Length: 514
Figure (cartoon, rainbow, N blue to C red):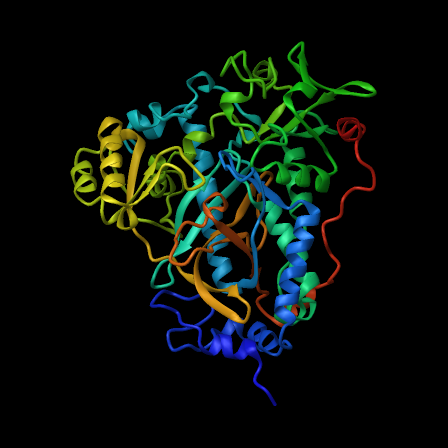
């Protein structure tokens, strides 16, 4: 009998000296991947390529895309999706989950403090100037009580693994974290593509996320039967697919700033039936653009008077205004202190060693080691504003040297971490290791909720460690396994438990399409 090409591909697979998620250093499949590997290797020759093409075509038809600003070849692209899933065993996920809950709890207590008593600043645990000079610190919201004392309702925390396989937090995204729509659509695609593999591995479901998100939004509402909307900048935003997708799955209206108005400190939505009250806004617009009467006067994306309604307690916003200070990469350095200060606990998840250019003792070290460090701007995202020192040219390093010296507060530096790798399809019949990270999504409402897994991003370019979609990255499915067969049976494993769109669109949705 002829040898299966997938067998050949994995027999020649090399870990490359990095921690490999699927293979141990001796080339053996790790225990939690064995069920998947056995089924995958038994796949008939050519089947994998056929399934991969079918998924790509399905994503194209469904418009599962992202937008790239400044791209001369066009702004809209299909999000690359690799069919070999990343698998996390139950015990590892349990540790990650506990660490993520600890982290978001501390971040919310930190935000409540710095917009209230400022105890952590007054006693010097965190230098006051670091917080008060942060780009997204909103002084005008000091002593403003947010609904339920929750600031970050949705957080996407980026996690990597180093060369030893230790999980490390890379950064927190507490303003408008994106990517969860790809988690849900990737799951739908892979369940349809490999239903038998999904069943045999005992994978925990993620389809409940839209219902959990809606429950959290309703929890922070000022009334018992709230109207919830999703506020988007519009179809040219990089994450517009996600905005429309989540609104559809939750059965709520997606609106732009022009669809809302404020009267008597209350928010209303323009519909074909007249003006309807709005009580909760899941906003996917940064603070600066939310209300032109308070923030940027040139913003055409926001809603004039929205902040007055928010201050009056007539509308809730998720995430709250001012959460961007927790996204600041300089603040990342202090999260372990926050955990100890507010919770009296040691951090359950380690952080990447970080140097602050704004610290006199760190600045000379950073400038002397630009060829070995990764330098990041404090408030950039998507792989922008970053220097990969070992891979940069001398001219690029000198450019960053000038930037750092001109504004030290705005830069942090970290050692180049050898991100873990995962088998990834590179050409017909061939798989190679590509670097990955993980973005779990944490909801914080009546209690913290984390869907099992998250978005595994993969750097598709050989040797690249930049996983962002805007920088040539793609994604993988993330499978978190049940702890045992009994738990899997209790959880249920129906193959067709996909997210469902509501039976009817809202009147506003129909009107906007017309």
